Amino acid sequence: MSWFESFVLGLVQGLTEFLPISSSAHLRLTAAFAGWHDPGAAFTAITQIGTEAAVLIYFRKDIARIVSAWFRSLTNSAMRSDHDAKMGWLVIVGSIPIGVLGVTFKDQIEGPFRDLRLIATTLIVMGVVLGVADRLAARDETGGKHRAIKERKSLKELGVRDGLIFGFCQALALVPGVSRSGATISGGLLMGYTREAAARYSFLLAVPAVLASGVFELKDAGEGHVSWGPTIFATIIAFAVGYAVIAWFMKFITTKSFMPFVIYRIILGIVLFALIGAGALSPHAGESAG
Image: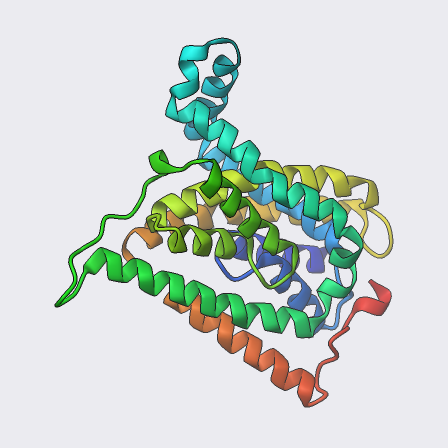
C-alpha cells in the first residue's frame, strides 16, 4: 500500500465511520473502484481505532462520568441505581453480541462477507430499514392531522433488554455494508428512542467493541501488501477527520432526517449491482492480491 492510498483510505474511514453508510463497505469499494488491493479486515479494524479515539475525546466528559460511576458501583451498593453506573453495565451488556459473533464468524468476515454483491445487498436492505425507522420517528415527533405527538424514549429509560437489542443490531455491522451506526440507530428508532439518544448510545457502545477488534487485529497488521507505516498514517487521518464528522453529525440529527443517507445507500447499492451485472466490476475486485 502506498502512502497516497493510506491517506485516501484514512480519509474515507474518518468520513464514513459515524455516518449510517458503512465505513467498511466504503473502504472496500474505494479500493475496488481505484484498482487497489482490498485493504482487508485487519486494516479496517485498526484504522477504526483512530475514529474511536475521536469518540473518546468528543464524549470524554460522558465517558469519564460513566466509568467513574461504574467503578464506584462495584463497592458502593447505593451507586448501583445511578444512571451513569447503569449505563456502564449496559455498554458492557450491549458489547457481548458483537464480541461473541465477531470471534465465531472471523473467517467469514475476512472472506465471503467482503463480496461486493453482498455489500450491495446490505446497503440497500439496511437503507430501507433506516428509512422506515426514520419515518416512524418523524411521525412520532411531528404528529399529524389525526395523530398526537408521541414522546420518544431517552437513554434514562434504557434497560438490559433494549441494551441487548442494540448490541445485536451493532453485531450486524460485522457484514460490510450494514453500518454500525446505521444498524444501532435504526434499532434504537424502531424501539422508540429519540434520534439523539440512539446515536449517543451507538457511539458509546462502539468504543469497547471497536477498540477490542483493533487490538485483536494488531497481530495481522504489516502482513501482505499493507505495512505498518501506511496503516498508522491512515489511522491518524481517520482520527482527525472522524472528530470533525462527529461534531457535525450530532448537530445534524437534532433537526434533520436520515433520508439523505437512505437515498445514498440505495442508489449506491443499485449502481454496484448494475456495474457487476454489466461485467464492469468483479464482485471480488482486488481480493486476489489482498
